Image 1: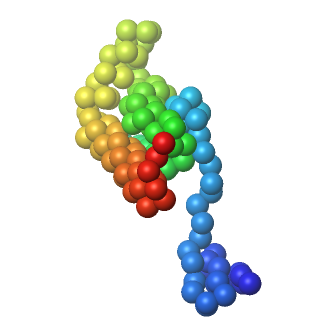
Image 2 (image 1 turned 90 degrees about the horizontal axis):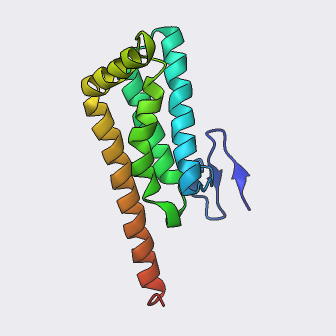
Length: 148
């Protein structure tokens, strides 16, 4: 029997308290790319309205990369690190200023160069998370027996 706890955890029959559970979302490869790009574009637009700084955008990017890498389904794990830099660029579009297409393009390239640390960190976070998930799945499959 499980009882609700005020902290969001639940107690099992043995009395152990478990933390809150993450949603069991499983995104396809295309869904992971769309999720990541849509969230980063929305956050970029919100930060443009609020006058947010680049560091805030970078931290939000790390969170979105982590969530995408955790929620992508196992068959599409490689989509998360591929979608991350594309989403970073899509989210920069509302934040840059420029006149016309070439001015906006120059603004995006300049913003990418100025925030390359966040870009690499988020992409690396997604890549490491995907590798750890893949290793855990292989270790779990090895405990069950050989894969045929």
